Image 1 (cartoon, rainbow, N blue to C red):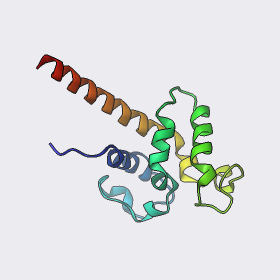
Image 2: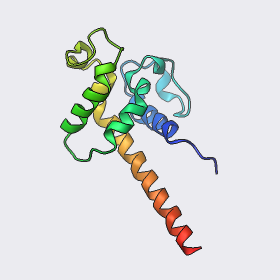
Image 3: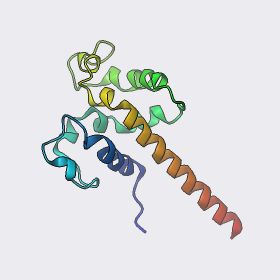
Length: 132
């Protein structure tokens, strides 16, 4: 079985869940395989900041997006260069034109599902090692 790094699994999950509906995606790319990068990813705040997004959202749990939004604003938006007004007064975020802001719930869901999958696999390996 091929071992795929967690960051690549997150990218694939984002492509499956977010990219297919994103208004920034290149026309026709919604049918692309999730393992294949789209042309827009280099400029996309989600893909550019995915490691930071994952680190920031992992310790947060809950149904309310408020804590996620605050954490991402502090960890990602303050240093983002996707918009000249990035940070606390980002016009892209205020008008929901920033893909991270627009699809935050979906991004958080992908990160949480991948973390759950990783914990489950780690627990299974640990149980198998204890039996051996």
